[in-house]
Length: 341
Image (tube, rainbow, N blue to C red):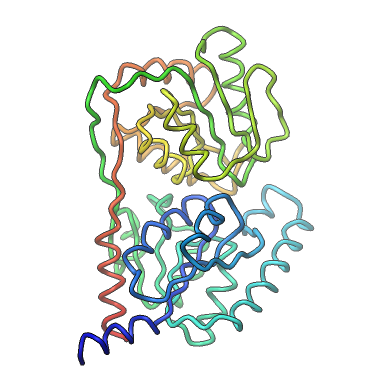
């Protein structure tokens, strides 16, 4: 086969990168450049990040759906969003014909992945970076029909000993003497409200324990703080600008927000959403926050008092960032493609 023939084959080989919003989509975004010689498109929820991808890639949007909605919301909402997602997913599965589907989960991706697998696409499942000790529900369901399984934390080999481990997280110590920043930026992510964290920040502001200017992205929160500047959402580029201007970032426990905050050079304090407070479907954010803290990347808070002490500790701690290197994962994917193309 000549080089020209190889190029023509890869250009015809179509790959669908499928995932919900937040960290699921950010990881697919990091993988995409390593597959640029193939015909790549995204299938995801509507979000600021997915909108930003449209300048470079073809993007198909699906309605938001999560299996855990029946735990934190009403069954009517769960069924309505499920039917809407399934209908659009099945229609899209017949409209598009990727040779390979690569998915990081979660609920919004499930019906499209399942249907494309039934229609003959090969499937690589990458378990979410947020899953440290145990698999996600998406993973428990979809690994059964995956052709290749990739996990990002060694702890998951207890569940799936046949998986390939590719951990892209590489901590970096930042040099001292960086340009001083004075303000605090708070982000709750794009999907779920997180009133408990917003109220904790506002409590510190009202008590005078947090004197720096505070700006908060509060998402779908039902609580609007009066003591701090806030807005519901913004695009990905604007979020990066806020973080790059912040000395301290107070984040929920989502991997996407944590990684972007660390890469901005801000000192990061995280508060995990917890199932017992009806803030999330399960406690995977507790797992990921613990894993980041064990690597000395962040401080962890649980309420207003621990948030205050975490902020004081992070102010004097070694400032750290992370480098996300998807090279090993891309190699595993490309090796699989080469063996089946």
